[in-house]
Image (tube, rainbow, N blue to C red):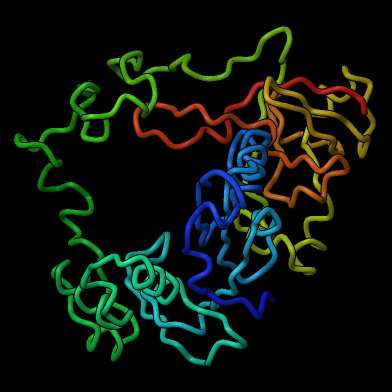
Length: 337
């Protein structure tokens, strides 16, 4: 665990003093590990290693992103601060109370942000509120019971009524009708932005859309970087039990594709895209379509012999209509290592 770091005014003085030269760009990273989980990893690493970037990472563990940092601040874990949670896959709001004091000088996200605001003179009433105050106001502004009720019952069921959840009263349009032919030019996430993917080329009716990385003669396979069962993005990929379960970075290949490539099960192979190459071990799996590869992820970069994680191959191009990244849409070649 990271310990013995503190925020001080020296971090927020004249930017010339930080680098001993021209002004620098400062970045604070909390709750994410872009050096491992972000697409087009080579460019991400180059960006994090810039000489004109002052990087502060607030973390519980020395992640791959934290290793790029100029300063690492120790962060609390979920039992060491008050928080509110919305679970994926069910309709409940849950209360996560602080149960133990954090060790050393570990600080919560809220504490760090409020201290930074104070030091730079930023003003907002949220900076003077406790996490409990913010949770209570958020709940009430969302027309939910307040924190007192949440704390008493531990969770709030926010499941919609059966009629609404099953659209028995219609859909979210003025006429209540479902749209098989959407007006992509009017969707709310496109308004005022041209960076959320090629909306203009989306088909007007449900159909296959070729706005993907189609296989080519140069890149004859399509790769999906699907989640591993023992990891959650890069969370738990340092945990011995999770690493033992997953074994090592592998790419699943249909046995007939392996035979055509002259590969044996367990062979070292190289995968390549227009963005870079990765060395990994092949594993035969008949549950795939031919021409499709699956690399369960996200393993740490240093688990790969050349230090290049699987997201070296994934693209940062934003798909339509919602943006984001198409982690499971990559054309690659595969060769014996």
